[in-house]
Image (cartoon, rainbow, N blue to C red; front, side, top):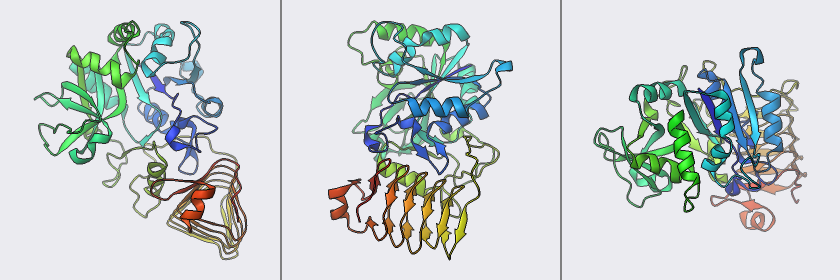
Length: 401
């Protein structure tokens, strides 16, 4: 098995968090990057030869992968970033399928029987080996991971329509107005998770055919999967069947696309309750990342945090935190109030400042007495504000008092 992770996404809808980094490199959950979730899922499943295809503003992503994901070279294992190499001419990747086509040397060198092509910017746990097992047993050319979603909300996804057997993919529909129901659940439909397992020879043939098609946009979901569906070579894998060790009834089957500022904020709020919707504390299927050598978090001068995550090295000195994710090396000073917010490493909150539903990128400084999320009309004149009213400051910004 060779793992290929598609990590070249620009993430325009996450601006300003992606102004200086690729979407998979965006910090998440206090001490992770988004790419850590797919890599953890692959490594925990036993797949330890992984190429991460990068392109857009990839420096921080490349650095994170090379410093964090060090595998046993004696056993031939690796996780390596692969930038666009222009092997087929002076052009960058034209789409996700073209990214793999231009990087087929990785497949030829490794000579795997199967290739797992996964996206890099979703928050979830998945034992990929169970999907691979179904793929091998079925003899399909490609198996596509599908998550059951209500038909009423499925029009925002790429949707998989199955044949009567519930497994063979009959059509791959991009954001259909009237999504099809499932044979065993008419009120549900499969949304594509962007995760695929291919038989290697079938993948190579499909990429070559797509490359020769001048009308293609060279996208995995938009071109490769529909091409293979038309040939009867595609099957769906029901994510609801995936069993991850240590999962709770509450977080089993959790998957979230954090493609917008609102969904990014919502996913963080899923982490902080007493019984979290997504549980970071599952030691049987850990989410792995680099941990900085920082001292423990400290609470002084009456500072406290309720239903929150607080990272190492942070000091809450008289401030009050509730329902928030506070990353490492954050300072929250006397009288400050932080509610429903996401603070990335190095943030400083001045005395008496008030935050309501905010996202602050690395090293943001909020001066004493400033407010964010209290007067949204004023905030819209100064900062980025999402559709649901989340106030967002980019890296190194200073809030206005």
